[in-house]
Length: 213
Ligand code: ADP
Ligand code: AMP
Image 1 (cartoon, rainbow, N blue to C red):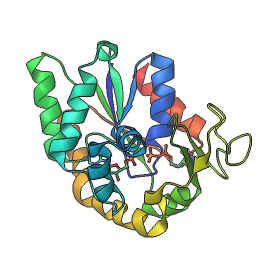
Image 2 (image 1 turned 90 degrees about the horizontal axis):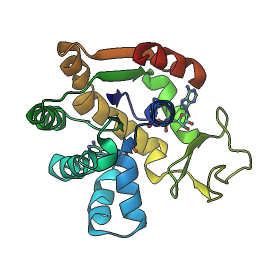
Image 3 (image 1 turned 120 degrees about the vertical axis):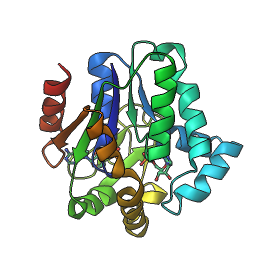
């Protein structure tokens, strides 16, 4: 099963994608996590991506597409995957579609986790991320057992640089201008499914599994 998670930054794509990956035993692929791992390891790719991410802008398509296509070509992706944060532009969606077409393959579902902008800024300022294992928490809604410490790997939790309110505002503008058109793109392909992302995370997940099962 090949799934795309759509939605504004902070809508809960990553939270749901991790649960989908576990339930259906498919890899969770987040381009944001791949960039953050590169930043942490000080790679050239990380240095380049950081200049865009810190400004709330998208990393250029050429760079992002290459990373994603390399990742989905790996062995563990044979039975499918859940993409979180990719595609974010129409050209990215077209490249993915063309590459899958060549293999006689396609995306099965594009799930739009719908959350109004008013809720987003609040969510993002409460998000805490583990840069070691990629786990995410929310200080009010989904707190770690011990404040500031990742339940899964014990590393320190941080407020991402790009989750500060001024950058979130810019990211929302970029989302509406460049990513939201994908809703139309996948509606035309008859694979768009919308879920109400303002519900409790368990209810959002129940709505998603009702679609996938
Ligand atoms: P995205 O991957 O779309 O950017 P995340 O999954 O990281 O979003 O979620 C953004 C923030 O909102 C995180 O702090 C997360 O813990 C929290 N969150 C996710 N889903 C819900 C939910 N259904 N209700 C409340 N908070 C949520
Ligand atoms: P995320 O972790 O999905 O919120 O992504 C964090 C940041 O990484 C985004 O604001 C972008 O700067 C960059 N990024 C992640 N995925 C993509 C993508 N598919 N295209 C362009 N930039 C991306």
